[in-house]
Image (cartoon, rainbow, N blue to C red):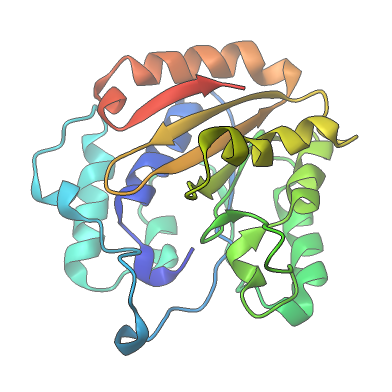
Length: 238
């Protein structure tokens, strides 16, 4: 996550999901995986620019969220701090320290300590799960969460949701990135599914659900997707 992305379509879907889960009595933790903004002159991608949904009337039940994000985007002061102060949650905890390669282990340990009591923890890296071509401690490694980091949150007893940007590989190859958690000791018992958001660019939200959370959480998600949110998200089993 970068401050300059604040309020885009990704925020709308992920915060909609988390607000729905809080309404189902899950406590929420959010690790922004915050990385430095890119200078405007160097930006060649469309990341963070998908805010057209705010130009239309709200078409989900969460009018408050839509209005809050619209206010932030129109202010031209787009920061995660603004999201944290927007009263979108009752008692959520946030980890908003900048992720730098040289201090990644210390950064991760501190985040585990800060968020360890939360029922559901959302990990929000720029790109998603780690890839072989980019090492976690390399220049661009902070754009990814590692499998080990995600598993650490799960091992502490939290359900974990991971943002992952859909790549260009065939679907069967792409999904192997998710199935890797089945072979990890810490997460092999996790109940897994993902929500796909297809507007503008395709992104997935992978759920690693604690068994004690699963029945209540699944019902909450199914009710959520029976509303206007079905225009934005679709659920897939793993």
